[in-house]
Image (spheres, rainbow, N blue to C red):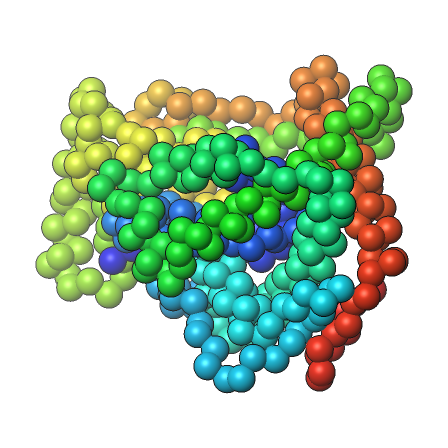
Amino acid sequence: MHYRNPIKATRGEPTTMQNGCIRHYYSMIPAALLATACILVTAGCRKQSPADADSAFQQPSDSAQGNVPDQPSMPILNIAPPTTVVEVNGSKLMQNELDNRLQSILAAQGLDGLPPQQRQAVSGKMRNLIIEAFIAETLICEDAARQKIEATDDDVNAEIDNIRSSLPEGLALEDLLQQRGLTMEFLRRDIGRELTINKVLEARTASLPKPTEEEIEAFYKGQPDAFEMPEKVRARHVLIDAREGLPEEEMLAKKVLAEKCQKELADGADFAAVAREHSACNSREKGGDLGFIARGETVPEFEEAAFSQPPNKVGPVVQTQFGYHIIEVLDHQEARTKPLEEAREEIIARLNDQQRKENLDEYVNGLKSSADIKMGPGQQPLPQ
């Protein structure tokens, strides 16, 4: 048994996403992205054991207290007569397709096990995003046809090759598609559609001006909090799984094992080897390395130990709600303000993304202004 914290970054909110060579600068969720996301997430779960969920030492969020399954659930199959959610210049998004897309996103982001009230709130936001994405992608594809812009077979083949290369050894893409109720024809069509959209968007943003030095400096000075770097430690650990509720004899055996591992490590044993053999945390595949951690990101007992230990010394056994930890701090960075030169590339990227999004918002809004967009019977209008 292992704890899982699937809600770390997205929490169901839209973000800039990357899938191979595909990058969206507009907050859309094209069908191909949903399909490939589900395929890849499912494959990832099968490549790893349930123990390979997010590190067990992490502070559980309120949203992660529900019973989240280790495997994404299958998409919901709506057997009711299909109803129209929205119609765009004659192209319709049906309710069953919306339901399946929604379930796919929730499963792909690990949100399908949320408590009912939280799931309802997240689903409402996602529903609107899916509808907005359908409207935008439909209009952009129509504009692409007018401009005679289209993804080539080579483009689609290259993206499918990217997907194949990311799958675990022994797992075939065709098998994963079949398990998801999808076909290769469907995947090729939707990837081609997404790549076509990207070609249109990239053509529109390729000639945008680069940020000036004045804009970079103004951004840096105008958002000082964005460049405050918190105190951080880079740590590695071995977690002996010993949660509350285990029989007393088993808890004692776990503690003895933790103390044995601690002594071996303090005497110079290979930390990575001990982690791979004994740790219940998914970080064992990286030799127990957790990367950099800021305060508030772990349970209090772990934080207190990690931030008080001297670097490059194996600390004593620490008990948390997840079990017994043996921690070694590899680096300790004090809080500081990131200087402009260090932040320059990050600022340029942010300004570029902001400029692209403004340009694409204007583009899509222009397409909407001349489009025939109708919500289906009984559907709530989208928020303005």
